[in-house]
Length: 178
Image (tube, rainbow, N blue to C red; front, top):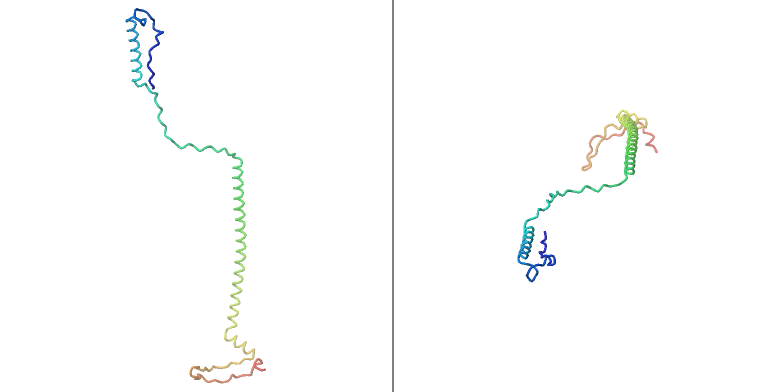
């Protein structure tokens, strides 16, 4: 609190009487001075005494301010969510349809693969039957080929002959004649 300046009251308010040159007598001057001293002491004590201060409110702890409310209309957002959900459902249905369609194609391809595997096994069995020695001899006889008998071998490094070479027996085939 700021101290107020101490001033004496103006002289015009003090009655002027008595024999003194200022118009006051001693009793009046003493009473005036005593009143002034009392007033000054009262002001001094008022300044020296701590004034009862207004109790400050306890400081509140700082906390995060809540976010500013967004004033976006809800209707477009709800429409957007519905569109997203519908598009997701359609996408899942399309994906399921393609998966099922491919499952049927895979089933058809597996069936044709089984048919081809059976055909391959039949052809391999047919070739194995035709490669047997009895079937080869019969096919050679039909073509006019004859059995050569046991063969003879020539060793190349030294020219030695192993076995006895003899010509084939039988009639010559039509393929051997010019």
